[in-house]
Amino acid sequence: MTIPDFSIDHMTVAFAIDGGLVEQLCVTLHSLLRHRGGTTDVLLLAVDLKPDEIALIEKTASLFARATLRVQPFSLGSDDLMAISSGHLTATSLARIFLPDYIEERVLYLDADILVLEDLGPLFRMEMFGHVIAAARDLPQLVNSDVLDRAALGEVIRPRDLRRAQKDITGFHNALPWGDPAHYVNTGVLLIDCAAMRADKERYAQLRNVAEAAQYPLLDQDHINRTYGAEKTLLPLRWNRLTGNIPEGMYQRYLAAQGAADDAAIYHYAGMRKPWWPWWKWRASRAPAKMLRWRLERWLMRRKLKRTSSFAIAKQSSAHG
Image (cartoon, rainbow, N blue to C red; front, side, top):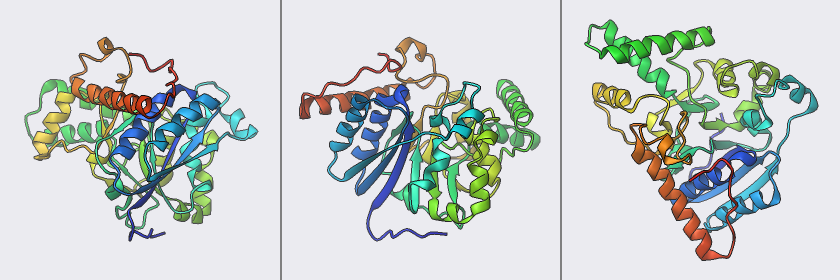
């Protein structure tokens, strides 16, 4: 295991996008750096980005004096491209499994549909207990498993919650017969010890098997979970608070049953409703405040960009509203 030097508050963060999520990435980057107390090196694995798209990302990073940005063009080899020729995958879908090729030691990978609510330095410095990756449990699997466990103990559960949990856990096992909901993590927030991952050459080669990753419903997330099984450090849920892929009320009842607080440090918009969509598509999401929080961050970012220069924000086709 590689132990970073935590005598200074420094962190390395990585993203991977193509042209479909440029402004969304900028919002994530702005929220990350706005809350940072220390220095931050940002690596972007860029898939077919245009010069004006890269310029917007660079301009966003330049708003923060203690941040550096490295844009690394990324593409898959011809053999790997043939393995994903079905058309539902791109190089972006699988870029995070190649991060140890570009980072020497520890890195925090973040999806681009994330809003950071506080300094992620403590997350970057978390103990990994000898594992090469650390991530939070996938929220639907966590909540559904908890519902079934409490029902098995005789606790009265809302019938709708119980039906949903039974259906979703059955679907999980049908899709991933090898899967274990107790150890299945969401990889939208992923802490990686790159040196230790590279040192395990056999498993790292297995992880980089694009043809195998391409066969799973959730691609590299499923592939990472299968490759490392239970050999992962489970992060507190606050470091990857998924929103939109499970009913908000069901999650609040889970918190009440656990006597826990909703103390999210990260909102991850991994569900079917996205905050950059037209408002009428998510107004009934049971969590409109979380959607509006993302829009507020976007407004802050746009205002700061306009005030610091005449730089024009490129309109993204997928960032409506």
